[in-house]
Image (spheres, rainbow, N blue to C red):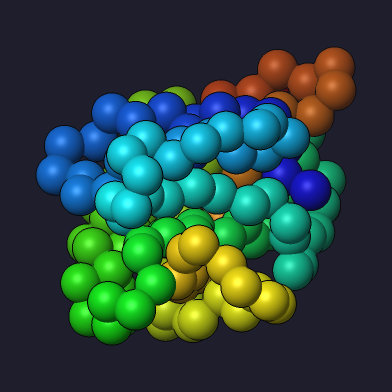
Length: 152
């Protein structure tokens, strides 16, 4: 599971970063319809393939993954959807948290996101790895990007 800070920050970036091609639709525990029927769009899945929490020097570090998922109409090939997804993930990876608490580390290459049966979408996913650092409970800390410790 990804922390609420990670979820909210990534959602915010996907709705505000300039240059994004695919509209973002939040589908986590919501019944939604795509923005325009038959048009490509993107969403996130916070089903971590890996997650790790470490405490040190008054900080708590969370490392994990989430899926960026791009959906497009079936029967149209993969080139346009993958190009749009790669563009948007590159923009997402370039985002900087002003508090230096969240860093997106890397993304996997696109993979077909297989769905059983007759589905209305061709789907591609990319796994994004992140690092989230926060002060531990009861700690007062200054967090600096790349720092492995904090001054209390």
